Image (tube, rainbow, N blue to C red):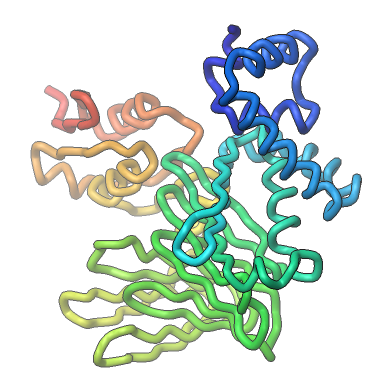
Length: 341
């Protein structure tokens, strides 16, 4: 088998074949893989069935547009999970470039409330997740666009979304561009606080287990309400960043440049005056690796610049080394940072 077969999982192989993105040589290799086991054949048949059903919900123009967008979304990976009650009935992990047409087809098929039978929607929870090192983008049934950061997930009830209200639950970080609808408020529910809007653009960071909650408003206006005994409420204006510290039960609001807090959705991290401590927290999320700063004073070193999700870990560490004269050592899934001698 060639490199294509070795590097892609079953769903990604099926997506590349069904979307017409295989060369003749790759197609031969794919057919060999297909016939090599009953499991491979069954997986492909399942993917093909969903693909064929999904195409009825998409015009050829949509399919062509999806293919055109593939090469602008190399870093993207979207996982769509559908569960009936508490039992998952369908899970597709769709990889970056190859699966984009299939990804959008699945979105149209399952989220178009005008075409899907109501009994299925009544028991369906939709989940969008972004694996480590990737950013996922989705379009909700109301037309709102959401970017989900690495290691994060967004869920909503397809049976009630866009009826009287629009509600989603977030674990991690996401950027929202909410379609305007004053009659149906849009709510982001997190562990620490809820965000309510009617139409705006904003970022929310609410990782599970963190002692802080953060939201940055890029456009429009939002209302934030804490989910604790105090039920504190604040309203934000464009350029405001609100940070809630659970330990002190305190909300601080300051003026920021939103692009420094929302650039991750394009696969980039921008830092204007961030410390090494701040930087390693983000790198740990992207690369799923643990950092150790040997000399605690190094953690206060300040950075200005950009890191890309597309770069590998070594490239990121080399940039830190050149910028701050900080050396690194990697052992298993841990990185040790020390001052260069």
